[in-house]
Image (cartoon, rainbow, N blue to C red; front, side):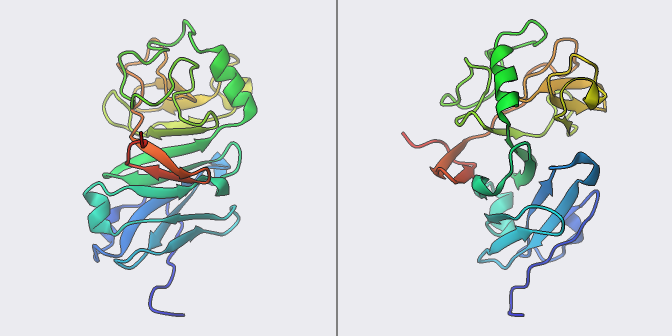
Amino acid sequence: MGSNPLKCRTDPEPSPSRHQNPLEMTAIVRDQVDDRRRRVLLVGTSAAGAVAAAGVAAPFIASWFPSARALAAGAPVQVPVDKIEEGQQIIVEWRGKPVWVLKRTKEMIEILKKNANADFLSDPQSKDSKQPDYVDVKDGLRSIKPEILVAVGVCTHLGCSPTLKKEIGAASDMGADWPGGYYCPCHNSRFDLAARVFKGSPAPINLVIPPHRYDTDALLVVGEDKKA
């Protein structure tokens, strides 16, 4: 099989501390094509890094990850976004935090643009929130590419991790007016699919958009700023 076998496991709540070899664990990738069948795939690699694949009953997802030590120090993470399906979200680890990479559908994008200055949002133009200057906030998308949302999946209230509720309207169990978004069950904070917080939520600001850039149209790099 070779000296660097691919190691995958399904585990509802993985803990990096379970992996004793600091050079073996590199990242957490969660496939959220179907929330009811959310899988967590722990990908083991050598210190040199390897190509990782997320497997059973899910579309192929591959990414190149740095070593665990480099990852903990904040090394950038590469994500091949061309492998992500429309409406699908994966989660990678950067600086010890989950980073969502969501490929939004045309319907999602249209709704976000319609709600660019919506009254139900606390900070629709993200004036008081954290994102790189090169991220477009005027159209309501908070992204470089309209279809790709990159956001730190940590609630700005007390640090919980919200859940993706991408269904629109009553199908989401979030109410008939739900535009699709994220729900934090800890204290009921709500965010749209641009990670903007709803009024009345305990979270004070929108979710953080991390530094990121595109090495190519197909390859996202999380943790590095867009080149001038």
